[in-house]
Image (cartoon, rainbow, N blue to C red):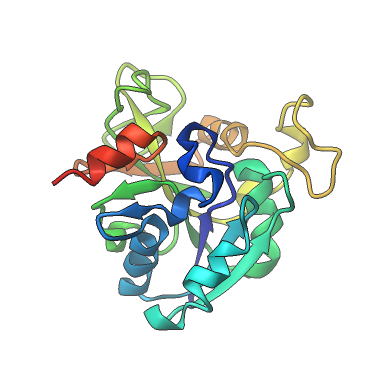
Length: 231
């Protein structure tokens, strides 16, 4: 059984006032909630079990999505508390629900026409990241990718991580020694970003990736949402 994790716990501060009463992943994009596009794609490639991280207006997710049966999915909700745990802390918090196998992780606030079936079932290393061309609001990108699909922290041509990838839980091994001490790692559950773990794994050659040349949007502002909904 293939598992998936959807990050849906963010406060959506840049989307206010739209997110004052609706979590960003539940905002409507082209006729249905943003997160439903992900659920449909995951179901189409044979995923049966999805964990959704929640925090801001968390009660609205089970009200809107239920147990996932309408898509042939089983949905479990991982509540992070009133303050989101960031991507790294959120993934760590959800591991107990995800089992031992690798899993697809998707940011709940992106929209794309990417074919999820093109993602590997198992990453070669600890993760496989889907990369996209740099959007105007992130012109310098995140990582470089070579002809073999190996990711590098530095490079002439850098791409942006799409927020879609396949992960092994081993990425989080030893996270305490990698995450900056400035992060909220002393609280329980700890709160930290996943980016330092990705950079560390890339440094020793443990992350590969692929490039998506189609449509992708980080739905981070009301303007980007409006653009997606403009015929």
